[in-house]
Image 1 (tube, helix red, strand yellow):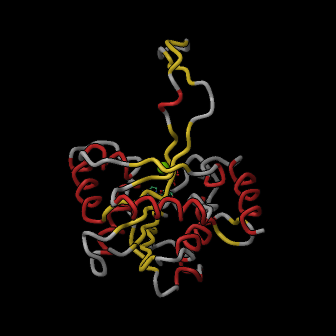
Image 2 (cartoon, helix red, strand yellow):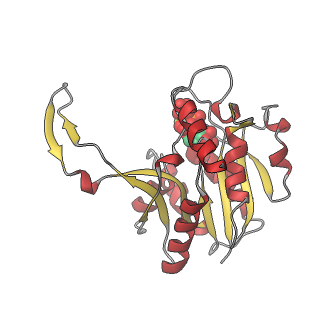
Image 3 (spheres, helix red, strand yellow):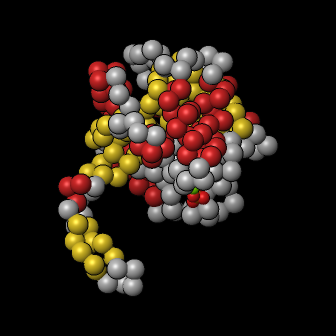
Length: 232
Ligand code: CTP
Ligand code: MG
């Protein structure tokens, strides 16, 4: 099986605020989206055959991004929710890929993905033939709320991981799982949740703090720090 990728980059960045969707904000001289696409295009071996990038096609900012002219990049139109954007990418890949091929889904809002994390994820999936996600063990003590501002209980943090991307699954299985979850009206905030719901096992592969998702304004200087460290 070969490797493909989808990068959802059609969000509006509501929590970030500002007039420009966060994937176009500049980090070390290039938009976040540039760094996210480059991280996947740089991966080798095995190389990623095609990267479908889900965009607002009406957005002229996408037209000014040279990395989207790479012959391995396919531009597709994103949808209302992240899962719709991912599905739009998966459908575009069907022209090139088989259902048995692997697809990595990676947020445009994660510009600092270390190549070592990507290598660890891909190696584990190919070794076991089973889908996986990058994730980090929770380090804080976790409190369950009673919903009224008081602690109900302290939960065992060893059971909890924070999901990151890339998330890597078989293309056909992921497409089916996402379509089923959307048809059932379930909230799907990542690929793994749709796969879990469909009964597939999902492995946890430890990722690093560098692979943060830029969500609020305070995340930008952090991303700049990690990107700088990566580019050293
Ligand atoms: N995304 C997408 N299509 C959507 C919504 C989100 O492609 N309809 C993408 C975003 O562009 C981002 C990734 O999914 O790269 C992760 O989503 P998130 O961090 O939530 O980004 P936004 O939805 O843009 O931000 P917010 O939720 O604050 O509005
Ligand atoms: Mg969002």
